[in-house]
Length: 292
Figure 1 (cartoon, one colour):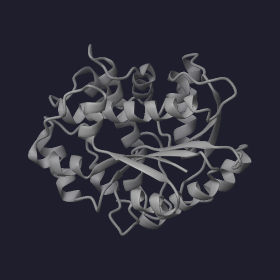
Figure 2: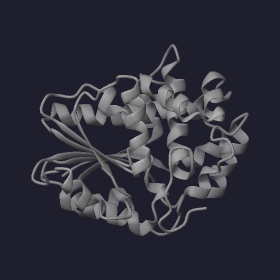
Figure 3: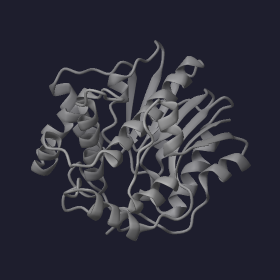
């Protein structure tokens, strides 16, 4: 269970969920009809040395729709950064970057800067693994090792962030792991740091997540839990918080919300035929893009 001020490395608590998602990206990359290509994902899993995740890559769970949602989600955020840079934005921030390798695998224009915010041990692990394999970022990458419950704007400024420049922000797979007050503070801080023309992309729940139902999905829809002994729902917070789409709209952002089905249609993929346990969570998941 979560506690105030808790920390983690890449194989514990919230860090293990990043490793799990990297496992899913590695599985998607290996498909003949892959939506994404993330060759770094398997390197992270192998370097972490957790036998469960390594076995999961080599022998994936017999579930197609839920696993493929990671392909949809990853493509959504990939395209967000591509559209932002095409529009001339040269400053980007990945909030809670985990084992995200977009700095290394996406095409970035010259003159850009990408900031990654996450726990120090997570960033250190990622940088070490990629350096050991001779993989360099394709953009000027600046790490910001800080907990999002602390003064991350100060740490971001110390790393060279310029609030007068339009910024592309992403928060992927993050919000349920934040207390309500921390989530609301996150959006307040992003808004305060965003010059006109800035953009933000967010994955969020519409309404309070049903944690019991989330656990039921893990138990009923996989032949084995893809996260091993970890019950991801125990890491979530379900306290009161602002609705991200409404909050952004009320603070001058133009917001678009897409569902999982919307993403599948947009990327010319079959709409995942989800079992009953997963339909509610899928319908309650929204992918937001907003511009200031």
